Image (cartoon, rainbow, N blue to C red; front, side, top):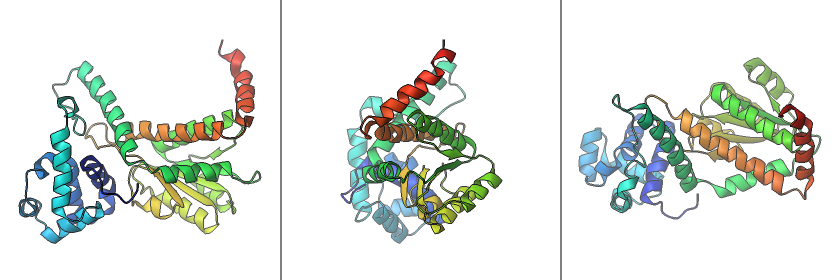
Length: 294
């Protein structure tokens, strides 16, 4: 993201993204901004401070973290967003599930949440970071290795990315067992690439692995749903998605689709920008499994 003032929607998304990295009082403010933005657009700073039991100074501090000069600028940006919403966009940031939802409505809401998460991430995506990650992969010396690490659902993303890279002749290692992850990291050397995926950005073993890899001068990359989380502090470059939390599905479901798309974009960039070599390897790997698909 650049240094220009954020739009109202970007403020809401950014508040959601940085919330886990803040202290208790500032977190209350960011959660109010992301979950009650329509109420904020009608409130004064004194009313918000009283409602959240925080000082006006705390609110102002959060506003500045959202690249606003103060509460008035934040409120004005969100007012413009709220007033500019079309009727069809009312579910844009708050499509919640209820006990009365039919299966048809549940399916519709899950799909809408995924679409919104993709659109929201597009609003805050850091193109410079994506360019840098592409460059790191593209310029990796031939004798250096790629290590993809994640737990649970993030490990599945690692395996999917490993599969795509193999299609174009790029070999990557994935270990889901924590002991194997640390054993591999102990052998990481300068110039190797270590990509860590953590939805929260705070998964202890993933953060520690990137920290160790960084000490060994590996190129460290993270993919997470939260800016300014522990994993970003031990990464040379970070790619960030954004997905709103839902009590039933959590954030992981929608965020995983976004993160999968980001990795797909990285794979596509690598495949398109190597003078045709990737296409030749793609044809070879496709031919290798062709007869097993019939």
